[in-house]
Length: 166
Image 1: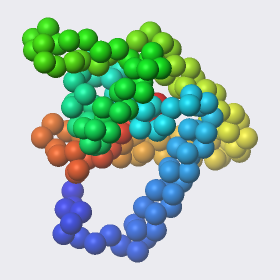
Image 2: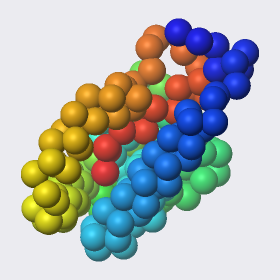
Image 3: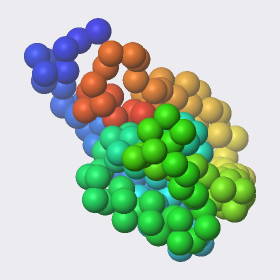
Image 4: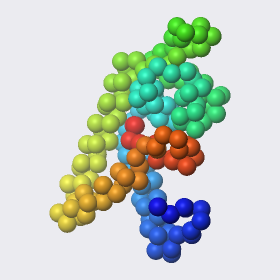
């Protein structure tokens, strides 16, 4: 595999990258518009992280989400006020609070994911058969590009960790 810093992408590769970035960003934005949760993207992502990784300290939420500790604290406060997460004292260190998802938080994420999938399925219904075939073929490549980073890879080197959490 080529070292991304050592070799500049060709004009074709750069154009494909720009088109893909724009399309993925626009698609993500359109799906977010159909959630109706009242949560910010940061709050939704943090909630999904807490669901996926289990009880965790706020500092770990900040680290996983690539946000500052004060932002993570404010985000968790809002999720807590909405009844979507709870805080409990870490049994191994009473100075630390662990954040975990509540049943209401889990239900909200399930609902959001179902609404996004339903909206996307509706959009796919409007495509021609050959378009669906081309999209299906491209999914393997897109999934490869967005797979979680390998152990030992720095987060800045592998932003693909941001999956379909919400």
